[in-house]
Length: 384
Image 1 (tube, one colour):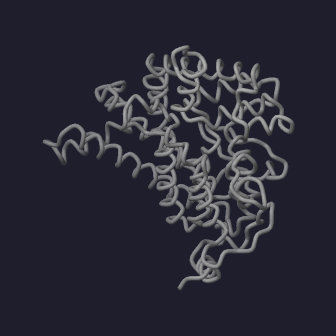
Image 2 (image 1 turned 60 degrees about the vertical axis):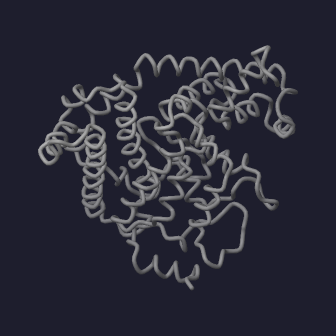
Image 3 (image 1 turned 90 degrees about the vertical axis):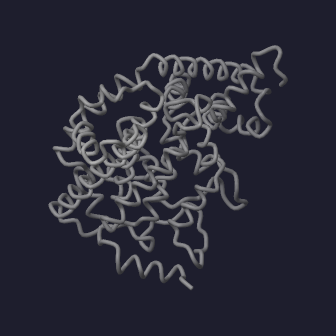
């Protein structure tokens, strides 16, 4: 039998000095007794997985709206891929895998339906009322909107996981400043790992989905050095392999190449900064978890290619614009007629105001639910 105290002893013995150990957590907003067989970060991970917000990620857009095909990634499958990549990196760097996984699983809980177009629409609609940021919304979800426990609102997650949610940053994500979570300090290395794992996951699975959809052409990808080098190597080894297997092997090799580079470069930075403790990480003036300069240069054309050929493809743009219209119409309807909101949401209006309640309600919707609501409210032949 492995007890929580024995897991803590294991962390002290095998994790690096700069790793965030569960025994050093700043704790929770609302005090709880510790669990006999799980550390605080393991409990956080489990609470996130069992949350309604996590389940809803299954029907929230990554790039392709859910009804366009069963193959394409959703916000949930993206999150699982991020967690898998992040745990691999954390283990290699002797960081806390449980904290890393918890932050990874929580990093997109605040996302709207229809991907970033949904977020942009809500941010515009809430411009004079506090705006909308999915990191901040993620914190709102775990601190307030999830209603599961009788003794406190939200999930009552640890300080470190909550910090990881609001300080998550990538090409598509901006960290937000919350005084309680010390915005002037660097996040833990575990959170920094999730930031890069997020980029690795969406770059490579968007390549996969883009090729499968026919929006991206292999002939165009062969012009990119990072793709071409791996493509040539795999073509030599497996001359007769079918295109689907070749695509899978290339994507797998791309991920492995980037993860390996990241681990090696981060190890060098840890040594250069002489990190001995999480406090040293907090005081650092730059992020420690990073690709090498060479890999950054290799990745740049790939990311530019994805932006031009996939994210700005006319089919993706059309769906994004439709999504914005759906959200704008739903928002206007509920603000004008808050009595049409579910009873549980109406109860929050006195405290939060009608616009924030409507924003919370729409942000929590899946693509499918938002489309169904739109039909019910605006299609005269649809039952309400």
